[in-house]
Image (tube, rainbow, N blue to C red):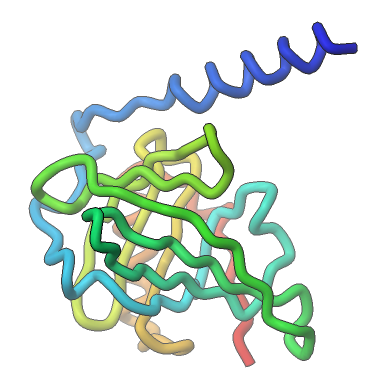
Length: 171
C-alpha cells in the first residue's frame, strides 16, 4: 500500500511540474501587472474549474500582500448560495518583475502556476500556462456583457477551451 501511495505522489508531483511555463506564440502573460492594483478582492464570475472548484458558488479570491514579499491567496466560496462561507488559505508569489506570472500553493508541497493575461480596474483574466484552466475575475459580482465577452475572447485567444467555462452564481 505504501508503494502505491509513493508512486501516486511521484506521479502527481511530475504532473504539477510538467506544465509549460515559458511564453511562446499566442500564450503570453500580460506585459505588466501593477501589483498594488491587482491586490484585493476579485469575484470569480466564471472559470474552467478544476476538481476543488467544482460546484462552488459565490466564489471570490483575495490577494493580501505580506511583509515577506509574498501574497496571502485566500479563496472564499459556498457550496450553496444560502450556505455558510468557507475559506481556503494559500500563498502566492510573483515569478517575474512584470507581476504577470505567479505561483500559488494551498497544500504543501503542491503548487501551480497562473498567469494574468489582462487586468484593469474592473476585470482580470487569468489562466494556467498550459491553457487547461482559466478564470474571469471582476471587482463586483456583475460585469457588463461586452466586458465579459471580451474576457472570454482573451481566454480563447490564449488557448483556453471556453466551451468548458462555467458561470459562477453570486447572491
